Length: 298
Length: 298
Image 1 (cartoon, rainbow over the protein chains, first blue to last red):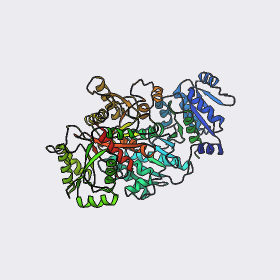
Image 2: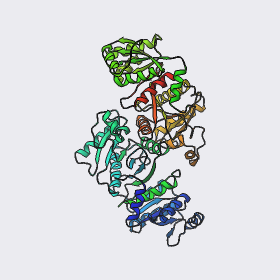
Image 3: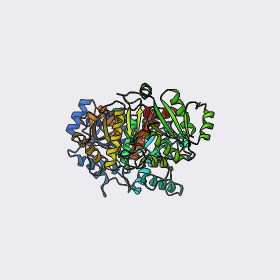
Image 4: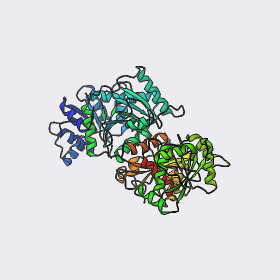
């Protein structure tokens, strides 16, 4: 059981050090986070991007580039392609988005011949440490998939489970969220949830324990679940919350952070390597923790 | 500005005392809440329902019925009809759901000839007191309307604004929530939000200040909004969050309560009087605060 995000830093430090390919690294907050993660011994960076700008920014923030590989690529998309190559050649293990839009970054990652595809969907998963829960809580998908079909929701679930496996949790508990805990044919989220739960029971989805539909209260509070007469190993002890769509996922993610005192780390899963994708409004600590999360995976 | 839920109790006490019609009152937790609210001088109850069962339960919980009107109606729907009559005759001012399903209760309220219709939609609104915000935060709709059309979302917004007006806030700030703060034709929530914001600017929606789409972070944090370059009087200071649908509304409502240390009061708006509708998993305090919220409205 993972209780704190700090444990990710310990985990990342204790294994073989990971090489982080930073795509279009000429972005001050990103370089700051990479500098901190390097100093903490969490990763070893390889920077791609405009070397002139990178040098300037690194001097400004006091990031000594001695011994650090910088591959000059003025064009951001070319920097993404170069970073993907580094991964494919085994010269880097994980990836981070810098000063590049998400579109061209994904284009390079999803390239059918030269990309980092694995067959499934890319999805966003955040791990939250909150004062109101007894362990880290996975939230997916808050940022990538707008209105996932059933097949896409299955991929989202499997990507999150894979992340937990890579952190050493062999059978994470997954709550598929609905507004109610009963199956209602007029509420698609509850239908998807029931299907995923039964697929888990029938051995079509393995390596985890799935229950749903569960509302947030049932998923995180055994007492609330008991009030509703719900008997479930997942209720009150979920590791992962799979939300109905991006609206509910984003509300969950941001409410935990901005109205719940939570701190999070987040990555994209679904490619051959985890991709760190921080947002400008993330705190310094949250950015470093996201790097640690990617580096902590086995 | 309302900062605490306790201020609702003060407000309810200070005005003319409201008569609360309790529909099918033979429900122990509901009677407990009514007893507490009566003792606190928040309301004066009128009970409808199975008098025999009500007497029994009141004796059990030590609720002295002397001087309290109890109208005997064995059938729950009949009790609802009777309560609606009490409101229409001016013998009660607000209403509360007891041991009756939501369906028959709404049937009695929405009856075209003898009900409590006002023309618009019924919707659920909760007021949250949370350690992470500087005032009470309205959340709508977490429980009633599954996938509101644009017209229905307008009613949901107007019902919430009416609640704030009745609490003395003349121009509440309304954030219409999306997963992003940009208008995206592929994300209906952002389209609805843009329409509502512009309708407010054009004077089609009055008595409030509407902005959207805003994501949760932009709505409640000025700093997060500034990071995104958003200039808005609503950003960071919203009174009301209108969510895209029941999935996101329910996630917001329950995350604030179960993963955010918040306490809430909630009512149904849209009928001629507010209707208190508590859930079994609500705390004692939350149930009493919901009664106080209904009683505090002018």
